[in-house]
Image 1: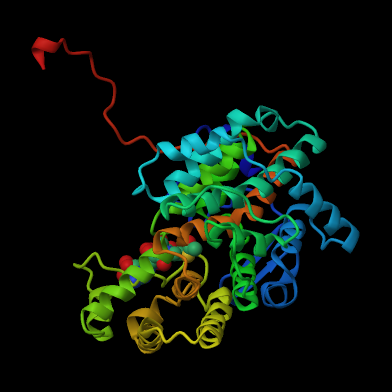
Image 2: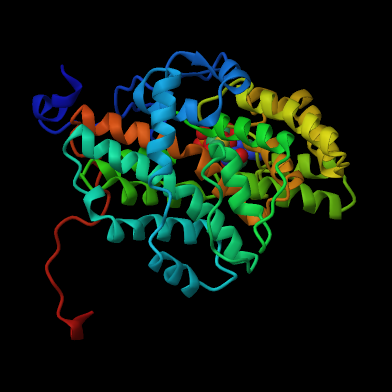
Length: 401
Ligand code: ACO
């Protein structure tokens, strides 16, 4: 039986798979992931090689268009993005209306959605040309929104970077330049951020990406589909884990650094505590991204001369978990978020911005998945359910209830 026609052919049979643990939602040619072996590839290229040899913009091009760009293609892509980097001034008014205490993920999702109102032509994208325009527009404006979200929190003026700089350098400048516009680039930070963004750039049908695809499958525009993805990413079981990991490591440090106590809590089924940054729906082996990030964390902290005690706590937890039967049996290994927050913190990025940085990295992945879904003309996403509520009952007048 063709699975697409299962219901019709069987007179009503559907499959129930809460959390879609075993259900594929689409065919995709973007990211290959073997969770048993710990392999991750974008368009066939290994994540290890891309993290070492490519930059974020090249990887964005690769994910979205399927091939590594030639120099000429990359230059054009870069120029097209740069020509769209101005954000309508009224977006600043919206940003101003948020309380300073607002979580940056809520702000980012709202602003991304709001862009639709200012660039309505990005909504109805039936041709490839219109799609390309919407894509370069959001790649240009998203880093501005990311930087402004941080600058608003820090009470800094909302302005622009320097279009002569590379994508990641410009992002750093926009985030951190002082009110008089000065910012000294540190190649260690540029390199570390480039690597982090590449490692986060796509991860096939995860929660936020599936959200982007399903929202976009109704032919809602790119920007609002991305805003849905940002909201899905925010939760601590997904992208929000990078913030949760740092909060957990800080709490362990404040509590005297007794990692064994927290290992015991994580294993206690009556305790809701989980070891944040551990476990993954797909990886039943080392998350290859975590391996790269762990080395990068060591390097960045050493290069910057930062001695962060929470790195030692993280390493102790990892070591204990790898030797603990509870974690071994359940194949729980550190995931991408276990060490990323330590690097963000060393870079001077505030805790509440960690998941925003994840969103910045995931942007090309979301775009490529949305584009693939539209170009393949996929049907609207619409899961079924197994109804377990009341059977038919007669209406009761209000005085009889
Ligand atoms: N600490 C302690 N126990 C854990 C953990 C953990 N971090 N993760 C899973 N387990 C246990 C579960 O209690 C369960 O045990 P049981 O079989 O005795 O009931 C078993 O391992 C399987 O876990 P599930 O929750 O069924 O696995 P699922 O695939 O649904 O969840 C998830 C995966 C959400 C990532 C989970 O491991 C988790 O909550 N981890 C912590 C949060 C986190 O780091 N999220 C980031 C994921 S990566 C990303 O999105 C970028």
